Every structure is written in C-alpha cells, then in structure tokens.
Length: 206
Image 1 (cartoon, rainbow, N blue to C red):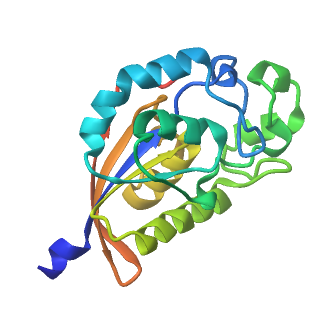
Image 2 (image 1 turned 90 degrees about the vertical axis):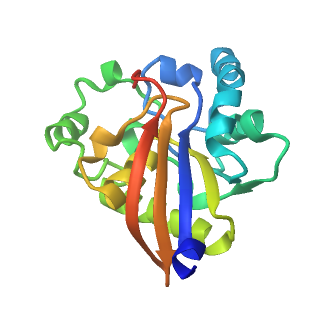
C-alpha cells in the first residue's frame, strides 16, 4: 500500500510549434513567442489523443507563452499550475539567432565543438539548466498529491529531465513538438527512484 501511494506517473509534453521553431532559431527562456497558427491547429488536432494519454492528470506548465498556450488548448477546462523553474534553457548570446547567423561566431563554434556541453556564452550550461529543471520537477512532486501529473514544457526541459533520471545523452532525448515521455517513478522522502518510461508521438524531431 505504501508503494502504491508513492507511485507517480509523469507525462512530459513538448509545446506546439512557433514561427521561430520553423525558422530554426534558438529560442530559450529569453524569447517568449506565441504558437504559430499551424501550431494552434496541430494542438487542436492532437488534443483528444494527448488527453487520452494524460487521463485525469493534474496539469502543470512552464510559464512561457508557447507552453501555456499549448496547455490552455489541451486542458483549458482544468486548472493549469505554473512552475517557474521549467522555463527553457538560457541560450544567452545565441538567443533569437539562427544556425546560419551563428556560423562564423567563434563562441558558437566552440560550443558546437564541445558537443553542446560547455556553458553557452552569456547563458546556462546543461549542468546548471538540468539542476534547475529537476528542482522544478521536485517542486511539482512535493506540491501535488495527484498520482498522475502532466507537464507541458520545452524540448530542453524534457531532455534535462530524461537524461538526468533515465540516463543517456542529453541531446538523444530530443522530442518533436507535442511529443514526449510517460514516466513512472517512485517519490519517497524527497527522492525519485524506480524509473521506467515510454515515449509517445511520431518520429519527427524537427
């Protein structure tokens, strides 16, 4: 009985598309963009499928507009809780710029050469970002009695949570818009353990 009480299902959902996603622009916590019209339409189209996955989950969202707008389209009939620590990574000097624009930037090249593991110039390192994101997940688990929790957040947030809890390379955990993971875990004495997971969504990670 004790184990059942502490078992949680956490569904991680990446927000829908924005215009900047389509343009390949680095969009972190410094860019609060809305969904594109295509993103809104896609969210409506996928709503029933995602609601079947989430069931009666308690809903949480990143505070950023693209995540909140996605959450409101998917779960507008429910209360949406906001967790500040789930904001996307701080892309610092790369924020709002495309790969093409950054091609000749030595700081960008150094970051690419490091496999993305060095701190982003003027921004966050993956290590710091992951600690922030996991802290946000702990806040949610600490503050919710629900056995089922759905979180609408960002590609980076999902990569940080999955690579920290389930292992593997941070960038290998990338999912496309409106895709994500279903985690089952044990939350006991402020600790997360006994993690299993499944991925949901298509294979398009653009």
